[in-house]
Length: 159
Image (cartoon, rainbow, N blue to C red):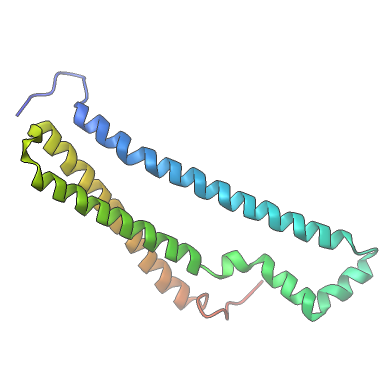
């Protein structure tokens, strides 16, 4: 084994961290941008609808109607229906777990990479599997809690 020089990180560890963290950061940015655009679109549509009412009595009459009730329920739809986020966690978890398994399979199949290369693949594969299993565990726990709180069957209590 090679001894690490004092104060200098091992190149394999640095590359492993870079290749593990950068995709997660990109995924977070893309997901947040998508949610932000959806929220802005919903807010814009709801604002335009509310601006059409001339006075507060018209607005109250609308909110008491069946269409108004559906409008109010749609505002809380994202929070009341966690199935989309649970499915997203399952997808990410499965993908990361299988990517980690594939990396470990490559490591086992290519012993000519040398110690640093093999260690790097071991670390990257292990991290991918661990993060993937974390997402899957999160999805299972979220599903159980959502079901226990009545959020999965659409009968959740609204405020």
